[in-house]
Length: 172
Length: 141
Image (cartoon, rainbow over all chains, first blue to last red; front, side, top):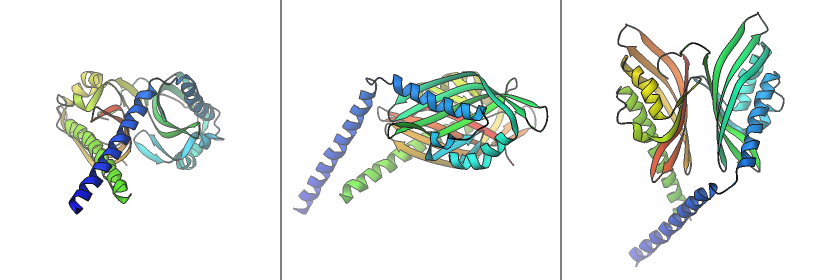
């Protein structure tokens, strides 16, 4: 009797899990039929707002573009959440810049709700406050955004750069 | 209810382990200096990015970058390897941090760098595949 009960429990559990998986598959299949044009535009607005803030050397409002437990990676470094990156890296760095400008900017966005996967390519030019030096680099940024309560927020972002003309070190 | 919770936890752990296995296999492939058996780890329309550059698909990356590059290495090893995986079906998001050591064939030069890689995998017909990977590095302090 106990054995039959266990078998029945297992059967019910299997059906439950199978139906959950089926719903997940249907949910995924449905994504292709959804018009994501508006979401794509909104995702681009978030990324542009970030770039605009950096170009203005202003960090005001940048925290709002990220979820609280976001993750930031920059050229081989694990920077922690955006809030940590802002306090320990970006804010001090921007104070050392006279100007920061992006050019040759391109972005591709792939939406699969609730996520958006983006790839940005650009050149950036930095003029330093301390001397007359100008830094020109080619950069890429890959980000994952998530739609939370109707708003797109950056969940994870990874940027890396190389000198405009030279090749990077061997390996990754 | 507890049984259902446990089953979900076990399933999530299984998915995480499978994702880790794919990433482990990719690292082992690079360490073996032979990428010929690694195409199946990536989707055909995957995107590979490395240090400020879009390399194209994994096939492009092998043909134009890592394939020829591995030919110049006498060894390529990873150490201090840490991986974090978040699974939200059908996707998995990974973060790897590690140090890599390269010994070049032609000269007595060694390269040691601290690196991070963020990847997105997708479960397609029961198999986890890398759809996007971005790696970058910096000098080791």
